[in-house]
Image (cartoon, rainbow, N blue to C red; front, side, top):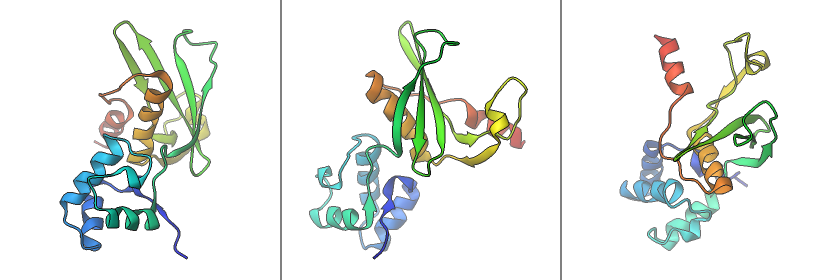
Length: 171
């Protein structure tokens, strides 16, 4: 028996290749991507713009977790402003990362992790002492934002942070 794969691990280009490999037109990848990341379907059978036979095929071969993390919990932080919320997010491989929601007047900021651990070893930061384990995949990063939205009733639309730092470091 073949183990089901997490469909959210595929990039949009990989979804196109997947659709073509099973005899579906490339535009099905755009429909699937929209269901995963815009409509945030929690089950393949909700994807009503996709044929029933394709939904059944996807359901047999892939799993679609509502969240790519196994659990999210609020962690109290006495050192932070009382309105700032830290969430410990456990990933499927049992690694954990932190997501922080920082409310401000008229907006909310969500700081997401892009890596498990950190290779920089900055003297002021405890994360560096953990060492670097791995980069998160796109689904794990997006799911941190989706989790914050669900828990706090906010909608996030802009990203910045570690990926910018990482790009600068490589130059």
